[in-house]
Image (tube, rainbow, N blue to C red; front, side, top):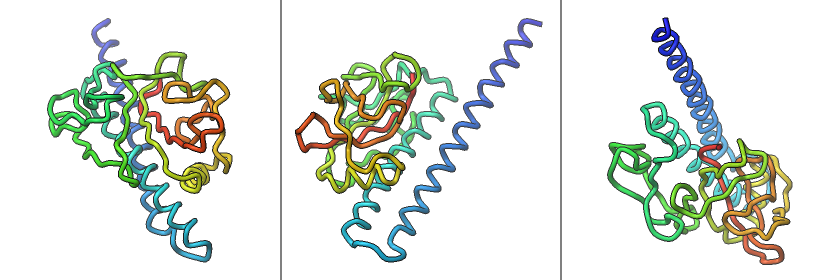
Length: 207
């Protein structure tokens, strides 16, 4: 009886994760649609370009999140997720079942950001922090990237329906002190107060 209950609970958990993957795939498709149709209609050309690039940031994060969900369903512990090595894990891994970018792992194709900057993966072994009001108070797993202009940062937030002007963290900012948008798993913010430098984050695993 206990064994049957265990299997039932395990199947239920897999079903819940599969449902989350379907949602993530739907969001990914919606973002693809937004990129394809963002140039239709009137509007400023520079703003339209920024919105297209903003969608590319969101697409990359969505695709990576789907890859990680598949890994977790297959039995990978999120504490074992491997993105690579180097400072803030900027260099992607290429082999191993725990490697998000390896064919035998997550199978996701690594690409630099649309602006040609290396992604930073804040996770196990790297500098990580907890996004306020996301999951528990444990460190989350998330992508981070420098954004080259305020216009692009604004476009990202516009895509997400957030405050148009990037919010400045009140706790010092940086890579592991992000409280500009509590409860928001994706956003672009001013990296440090008054810095006129901007950062994009995308939560991949809520903890």
